[in-house]
Amino acid sequence: MCILSTPIVLANNIHLNVDMPSKVNEGDNFTINVNVNPMANNITGFECAMKPPFGKENYIKIINVKGNEKIKKEAGKFYSIDKKNSSVSIKFISFNKPLNSDFHLMTIKAVALKSGNLSLTFEAVASDKNGEKIPVDEKTINLLIINNSNNGNDIQSSSNRNFLSSLINALTNFLKSILGG
Image 1 (cartoon, one colour):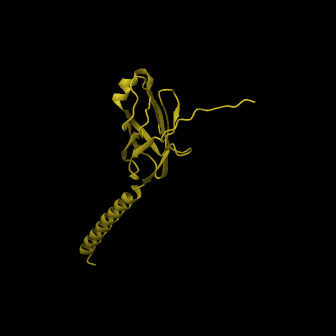
Image 2: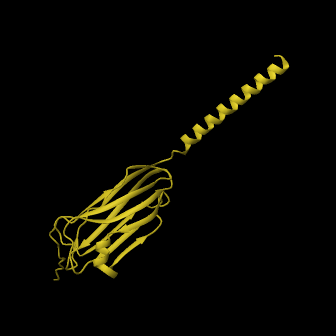
Image 3: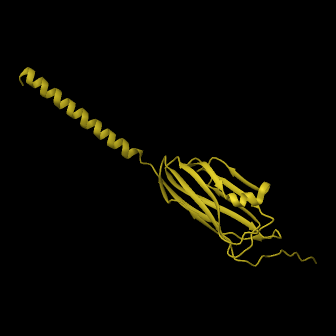
């Protein structure tokens, strides 16, 4: 009889804190800040990915991603950011100095491309100095992208109608004065 054992890390889950707007206009740029609260765990490895649901990849476009320069310097070649059109992943391993206090993970700059409801999922995993997995709470943040172009078109159409109406009235009055009507 063989008994398999899996080591379990007895630790509190690590928390992701995501700061981003809940509502933006189509065409607007917006910022997403991701911070990590290790909950007294000693983190040496960390991976985090932000992605929209399948089929909604064209609702936003990632313009820029900036990671934590201090962690990047510490991790050296074991630090990477992978930016795609609508998703981002960041990975690092810091062998020399475990992280055990709150830290900023990344700042994402994006643009809203298509109106609708979008749920952005932030999935992460961490590890301790022995490479053991430490759970990280998954976050799903809802973003409402509003299409304001119809309102602008309505206003423009209304002002065009007012202009045309005024022009027609002026021409009618001119013709009446000439023709005596």
